[in-house]
Length: 281
Image 1 (tube, rainbow, N blue to C red):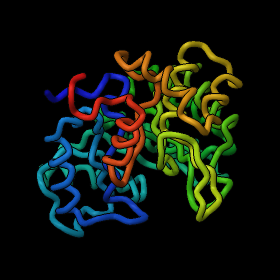
Image 2: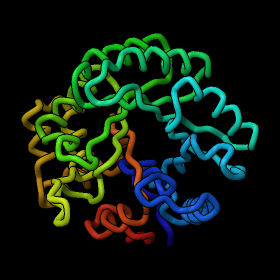
Image 3: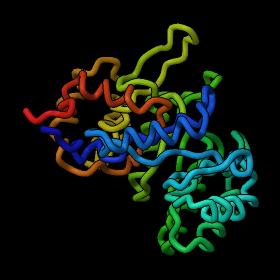
């Protein structure tokens, strides 16, 4: 008998197969996404992520999707309207507010205006983990207090070592979001369930299960050091039991992340015994 994905993992993984570094074609991506959403593990899935730059490049089929704003922020309203005209239900938009080292406030102001004009469309503002971060989170919290559907997004990996925050750095960000009641998304680097070092690049990647358990600890009032300890774990043993004991409760704060192949995180969760693999036990 098929089983639903436990509430703790509901909507955790967005389909990022259309995004770099190895995007597949739109037709194939949509077909695969529909195959996933018709499967027993459909509950694990968030949105199919569609780059805004694809608009006009090829026909976009009727679907529901999250839009990745890889175009100037000023172009987002027109892009969203074109997608809607093509029959796309835009579930949310994700857009960067600044490059690393730049002031995020001007970009946040533009996205805030866009969100207000869209009347409820969810927007995730990608904020660099660098100078101006806490002030930017204060601005996002202020916008949410006014009723705007905006939340932060952070990159936790990339093509350079400095783009991978340490466990303590990421723990501080998670706690800062907790203190401001801000849900957040993550992007880049979350390739496996647990923290690991890529043998080819030497970069140490965060694990999505580490982040999930760290967020549970933070939501329960944990301090930065406790949250960082969960993020630093390189073996699943200290992570599995907290995840298992919270499996029937909604996930706090951590909205989710994108995966080029959504079956990979599913496979790891099944292997760890956190999802039953499609059958009741």
